[in-house]
Length: 302
Length: 304
Image 1 (cartoon, helix red, strand yellow):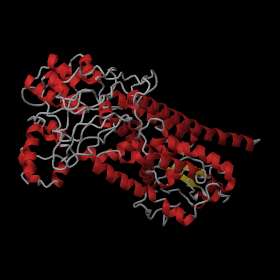
Image 2 (image 1 turned 30 degrees about the vertical axis):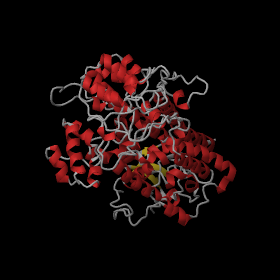
Image 3 (image 1 turned 90 degrees about the horizontal axis):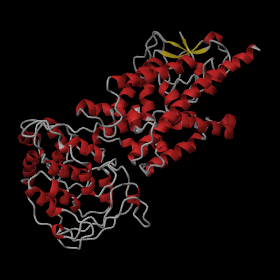
Image 4 (image 1 turned 90 degrees about the vertical axis):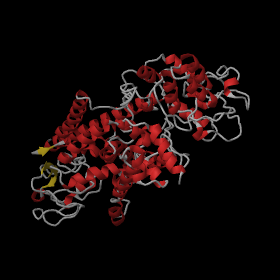
């Protein structure tokens, strides 16, 4: 009976994230549709009509350079993007890339495709990419971030729009999408059937920005080694393939704070994997931690 | 302190809602550009709205409201019917209509029209021309000197005009513009998404004009039928002629064309904008006359 109750608790916890994800997906879809219709001269009462760019925090991030140097925002970006970037920054400082795991509608979209992939490949799903290759590819998104930031700074335009599967998804019907955008979206859809959140893992420049906050976030995922039974349920549950079972504290730059590994979800032992305040766990560089936590690496510190 | 699903979800939602709500309260939450052009800073027209700041995202209504004239004048001038249509639809429609090389009817044409209608100053881009229907409106309603209006008329395009006939002598200008409802069988796709007509374009004989000399067309007269237009396109500045300064030219471009920072500063009174800034926008933000700076810079470039 106790186990049954615990199971129900886990379900309701996960359900909370699903609900938040659906709410934000709907808000973004409706707003972007309203914005695109407004561009075509059609206004529907009640439906918000901001452009997708104006509600994307990454626009605020890539505008910072131009804002500081020229005093203007990148074309198509508005003050609202800066506000959202600020809120995302606060959230990331506290909880890491919680925007990726809870809010980003493109992450949600990939999770829905992952459910389909899991039905097809079952336990093999999300294990196709060889570990060594995967480890290298994880840094690709920083290259994307560097390229997008540089090109946006040089041109003053949202250069990533033409390659952005997220923009493509919500503008499929508008005629504003470049061929490269369609290709990017098709690739992500296809890959999502094999790998969970492929865009987040390998290409998302905003995920790259937020991922850095995993190194010094205030609340993080902590594993209580004495109670851990090493069943690796946490590893299997992690959509980002992080090895939680070998870490004391998860400082992996790819963690999206989804809590899927926690004792409230995958972990069968109560109070073993939880999100807790992490005093004194601050890293001083990207790959090294202060002496307090010992020698660790980005892929899950022991 | 343990953070579980529900408190985390609630915190995320509340922080986002509070952040957005707070930003709205203090006026920081802006999801579109304001539709009020910046004011002219200096000179006779100081304090008046600057036609230069009309953006492609303005609707005809926005423009008319900002410059205090009847929106019907603008609609008639550009063959538009819906005052809530954005003015940047002109760029896509006339762009796809394959106007002769070096000319454009776009957002800057609206700026020029407003300038001639209200008498407010504006230095149009060299490539900017007006449709003849706008000239008709300006001849009766324009507050600018008739000399300027006739200069614009000399370069105006007349839908359906006979090849080689000067625009000022052409037949009725707008009567054969198809209604832009998108309902007409065989209507170009461009008209289906816009209230602005996509007329056939004929280049008329154009007398030399001191105002528009930068882009006097040299190509032969051609009748063009517009192809389907993309909506919401933004001018990219592609196709600009190296060495010719337009409203989109940036400081970086004139540097790559061979001008030194000192040379540029000599034309602006000792200041220079950021590499990425368009010279016109920068001059406007500083309250300087773009047309004067442009003339000095162009002279330096031509002298090279």
